[in-house]
Image (cartoon, helix red, strand yellow):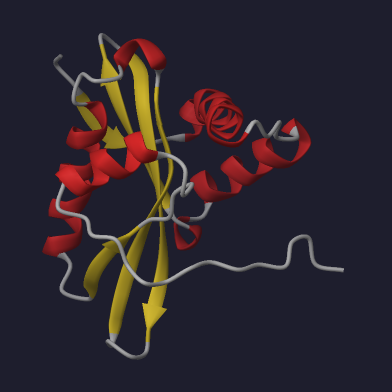
Length: 152
């Protein structure tokens, strides 16, 4: 599959919103509120400080996406890039789309001296995703995740 990889633009917002909705449903059977997700995607696309989406196109259509957000590590004096909102359209899966996105992001991160690592979190029951990430030399960590959401 021949892919074009690029940073997303505002014109990609409807596709990213739809992919995020599919991702939430497929991974967690969670129905996202369009009134929240659409302005959330728009906020990232308009403000690089919030992160950036990278998309994969095949034959002029977006078939995959990732979102990068950042976390400063005072312990390690550098930035971690968090890979989020990973989605590959169903008909493009197993075609190397995520691998291509991941390799592009890894190369970009390696080119930035202040970026010290890549991280992501995943549903602990998603063994297929875990296998994919391990095949790209990502390793399990001893960290768990806890949250309070929504606040108040």
